[in-house]
Each structure stands twice: as C-alpha cells, then as structure tokens.
Amino acid sequence: MSAAVASALGSALSGKPLRAIAALILVVNGLFPALWILLTSFKTEAELTQKPITWLPHAATLRNYIQAFSDQPLLTFLFNSFMVALLSTALTLMVSVLAAYALARLNLRFRGLIMSVIIAVSTFPLVTLLVPLFETMRALNLLNSWTALVLPYTVLSLPVCTLVLTSFFEGIPRDLENAAMIDGCTRFGALFRVVVPLSAPGVFTAGILAFVNAWDEFLLALSFNSNPALRTLPVGIQLYQGEFAFPWPVISAALVVGIVPVAALIVMFQERVVSGLTAGGIKG
Amino acid sequence: MTTTSTFKSEADRPAARRSWLSRWSDPDDTTLAVMLLTPAAILLGVMIVYPVSRLIYTSFLDLSLTSGLPARFAGLANFRQMPDDPVFWQATWNTVLITLITVPGSLLVGFALALLANLPFHMKWPVRLSLLIPWALPLSFAGLIFGWFFHSEYGVVNDVLNRIGLPGVIWFNSPRLAFAAICLAIIWKASSFMAMIILAGLQTIPRSLYEAADVDGAGRVRQFFEITLPLLKPTIVVALIFRTITALQTFDIPYMMTGGGPGTETATLAMYIHQNTVSFLDLGYGSALAVVMFGLSMLVTALYLRMIRGSGAAS
Image 1 (tube, each protein chain N blue to C red):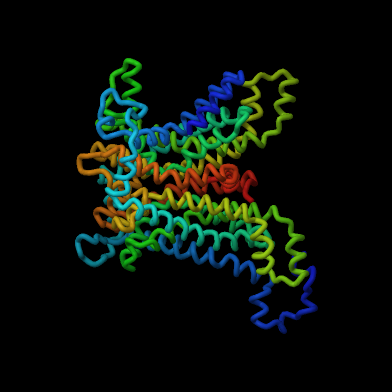
Image 2: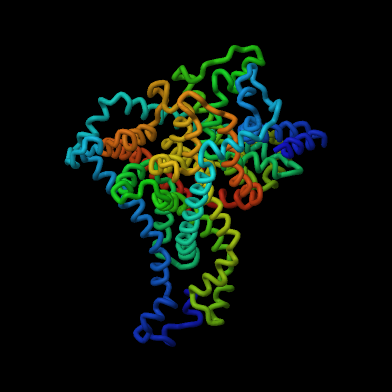
C-alpha cells in the first residue's frame, strides 16, 4: 500500500500534476479504509482511546494479532470460510463449465431463453432464500453445517461463472475440437482434453469470482451458522465485541487477517479479475 | 452443419444400431445439450424454484416456531398484517430511500473515479488495485470499518472535522445522521465496482472518435456529452439495474454500522426479514415480507430483460 502511495508521488514528480492528483484521489479513496485498519491493528488499546486520536501508531505492537487468535477461534473461522468458499467454488465450476460449453458450442434452439433465465437468476435476491432455506435446513438438521452454505453460494455464483465461461469458450476455435474428434476423441474427451485446458485462464477467473463471492457472504452465514465452531469469518468477527467493550485493535488485526488472503489473490491476478468482472458484467 | 456430421454421418452409424452405451459416451447434439444443462437445471430447481414455491406457500401460513403450534393455513393474514405494522413501513421506506440515494450516488462517484482512472498513468496496477480492493472487501467488513470511522469519540471523521475547526457530531444518535453515514458507506463500497465497469466501457471507445472531434473543434465538455456518454449508455444501464437490485437487498452495512438503530430508524427490509425469521422464528410473516422483496426485485429484473432484449445486447 505504501508502494501505491509512492507510485502516486512518482507520477507527481514526472511533471503531470493533474495525473498525480488523480492517482492520489484514487489510491486514498480505494485504500484508506484498509490502510486505517492496518494502522489500527498495530496500536495499543491505551493509544486508541487517546484524544485527539493518533493516525500513525506510536508504539507499534504485534500483540493484537496474537490476541486475535487466542481470544476467539480465528483459525477455525478462517478454516470454515476457506472450506465453504473452496467447496462451493468447485461445485460452481463443475456445473457452469458444462452449461457454458453447451451455450457456446451447441446450436441450441432455446439459447436466447436459457440466457435470459441465467441473467434473471443472477438478479435473484438471496434474501428471499433466507426463509425457506432456514426452514428446510432446520428440518433437515443442517443448520450449523458447511452444507447449509455451500449449496446457496453455488447458486449465487453460477450465473456469473456461466457467463464468463461462455465468453471464454466462444474464443476457442472449433477446429481444434474437430481435429481431436477426428483423432478419435469423443465429445467429452474433446471437452476435457482440449477445451478445458485451453480455457484454464477463464476457468481460473470464474473460480476467483466464485471464491470471493463466497468469502464475502454474510446474511446466510449469519442466519444459518451461529455455532462458533462453524462460523465463517465475517460472522465470527462479531464475537470479538463484548457487551460494552469494543476492542478495536484486536478486531482490526482479525480483519487484516481476513482481508489478506483475498487481497493476495487479487494482487496476483488483478488483470484476470478485471477481465472476468467485466465479461460477466454484473454482480457487485 | 453440426460438428458431428462432418465426420460421423448418420449413414455410417444408423441411430437404431447405436447401443445405449455409445449414446452416452458419444451423444448427438440434442442429447449432449440435455446432459450438459441438466446439472445446472437441477441445481436451480432445488435451490431456487423449490425454495421460492415454498416461500410463497409459507407466506399463507400461520407458522411461528416459538408458539410450538403446528402450521395453520391463514389466508392473507400475514399480508393484512403489513399495512398496520409501522416497522414494515419504516423498513420498506428506508430500503427505497437507500436505493434512490445510493444508486445515483455510486454512479456519479463511480463515473468520476473511472474518468480519473482512464488517464494515461505510467503504472496501471496502483489504480487497478484501488478499484479492486474495495470490491473485494466484504460488505460486513466495510460496515464495521465505516461504523468505526463515524464513532463519536474516536472516529476519524470527527477527528478531521475537529482539525478543520468544526465540532464533532454524534452520528449514530440521530436517525438522519446515522442514515447519511450508512449511505456514504454504501456509495463508497459500490462506486469502485461501478468505476471498473465504466472504465472497461471507456476503453472500448475508439480514440479516433475523439481525434475527429478535436479536428472539428469540439471542446472536452462537448466531447464528453456527445461521444462518451451516448456510447456508454448500454453499459451504464446494465450497471444501474444490477446496482438497484443489490441496493434493494441492503443488509450487511446497516446491520454492522447501526444494527438498525436508533430504534428501528435505519432498519431495512432485508434486516426486518432476517429478524422475523431468525430472531422471532415467525416464518409466516417473514415469508410474506420476503414475497414483497421478491416482487420488488422481479419488477426490476423484468425491466432489465426488456431493455437488453430491446437493445440486442444479450449474448
């Protein structure tokens, strides 16, 4: 983050003040909240309640991070979030690869209708699933389980992933597949040996979108999994606040731990994420 | 001509002689389409069609799990309860107001950010990251962080106000100020995604159009209104409709910032559905509220499908 600020200053020195100001506005607007949490996570509780408040930590400490892991089962929250996100991503990809292939390659008579259904589903309000799923999961004794979240998250990401993958499949020449089939591959053989490997970047992009969607979801996780052993991170964070106390430095440390995995994914694959978001066009 | 017929014509392998095994392992187009789309159809059936039917059915029941009584058909009683329920009106009004404020708000801010991000920077990644990180930050985290920003004693907002000589404000004691703080947080969170979509649209506009306009002597402002804006219209319409549907479901940010307080002054419809279902276990009334929400967003979706069908932008 300080590198981002440095580069903003860098373009300031290159003599284009408008560009430098623009970069500064963008970087401050985008990164200030995350930066503030990072700074707070190094402050002591005593420093936090000083007035006027301090911006940079006076005596930086790592104790908040230790406390974040010892006060609450933060590792368990991370593990739950990770497993739920991973399982739903895998399931979403399996289903959407097949559907996208059909939409991109086969001359379907109802293609327009199917596309409309997919777009309509992508606007489906998850809140309305809350009541019937709560009722069903409760009856099946599935409240407080990964399953209660994996299935709805799969539906949440299915439309976006299908749209992203359809546009990727359309970019792969049909001749490659035909060649594979002349050489003796079946349709499925061609799909899994030629098309899927070639569209690996697309599959990966769709996977990141599905993962981030699941990692961020809050309402269903809050409603279905209240047992601390099964809470995902966004819901688990709430346990840090006491009835009157609000231990901000420790909460900030936990937030930083929660932001880092997804931020790292995004830093590594920024261009792919942007292309996926704009190809799938939609959710945010 | 389909791909199969190029090398395996039906004459070579009459359909009647094909075993069921080869039909499965090497199917024709129609069979293949059915096989490929079935998993998605099952998933949507189980996770959307069934729950929505169940939701509509439950909305006609008197089903409160706290009472311990079995479900009883109640006709329209749940829906009749709504007009006399002040919290329902308040939550619905807040939801509509949040939509009316934050959708145009995030469009304007997002547009401004996109125009700034479209400048020719030497390094693209800091700009890209400053749009991507707010998108990836969970809504619940954003709510928590902005709640802390607006804290009356130790919040950074009041600190900045004090530094420029203004008195601090107790944001969360006043319904209006709390509502304003929530809207600011939502606009911040939503605008970066808007900016990314608009930026992608800006980058598809050919340079030559602006060069031609330069030659014709059109100024920057005129170029914006006569080239940029019309060409971006389809992109903006799609982004706005998705934003509207998301805004109708607002939950995470007000839940984390104010918990709906003071009182129920900043509660949204989604929060009220959640409270009736999970806290009060009144599934009948919760379902009826969710049906209202479902109707609202179906309305916006229908509008959306009509628009993209009209402009031929689908597929």
